[in-house]
Image (cartoon, rainbow, N blue to C red; front, side, top):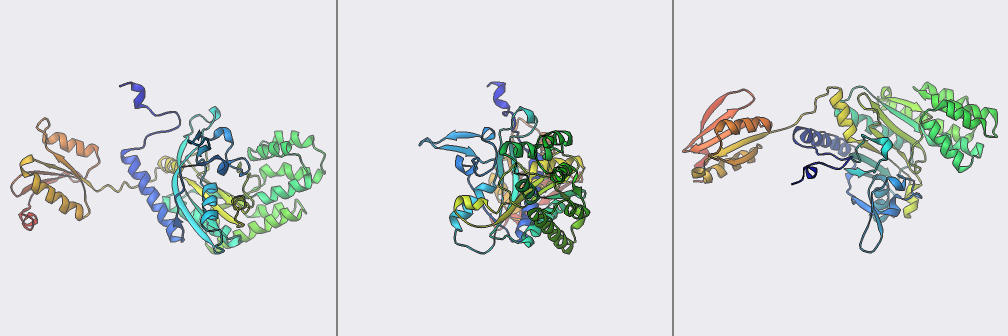
Length: 423
């Protein structure tokens, strides 16, 4: 066999043993929070028609999608993002439902990052939630509170949920009347907080000096709730002022949740996803340079699938969160209950009965026939490598040897009463 076959392609990796158990444990704990908030699970396909993630929808650029063809010649893509899939699904099955719909999900997404992003995974796990048919400010605040509760449940203590408002930026754009290329460059410069590039670009535009000054201030317009008051003094644009008022309402509701200390505001936050129409989220913590949560309001996206409904949602990047927890030395329980049960062939039947008894009592049993090529010590060492807590050794009669790998104790248990009902 070629050595190459043992390796994974660039951008993907194996997850196994303790790390895999910890990741699944973390995923389960976070999923419980979704359920406590009333969200129901939804599963959408791993691949969809290309049009679900097209430029018109406003998701990942086509060059970063994994594309292939089906037998009929239609272009399919591995999902790079859950939100358009769930919007499609909601439009298909809940077209006439007017009441709020709460969906949560978990699964892998696939983005074929270019060379500039070397080191990033191309397949990552996301957990997320979508609240559909609710355009209220209360829904915005509820989703923000859910993000904070998820991060607290993960074990994080030091993190910040940054909230932006794309309507503020869009109000200024309406006033400036920039062309599409200028808007693209402007968005990029503000998002990367490139003040000097922004200054140069705006110097070339024929706009009012006051408006130019507001755009120049956007990269630095972030911080605690006081920044909302500052933003109000910069413009008289009605659309932009309404956006600030919405942020103020969200902040006041988060104070009711007693979660305001985890929140800051950033008027320079502009998502690469064009489907966002209102507030947008990003959460950051120590130990990773990327956001561990991204999301926002997308009140026009479902219209593309034929349903007129507002919606808001977010995705939690589980791999980034897991890395941050590790780097902050925050313990993630493994939850391992496994024991190794070794038996001699002559007591095979009795061993099956005992293993089932212990499994029914909640233990995880790795059932192994004793091979004369090995010694008992080999199996005990294998159990340690496997993070097992106990080794059961059953060789004959009614005596079961039990080795406790946590305490180092050994006992011999009489199993005659356990076997009696079955023999």
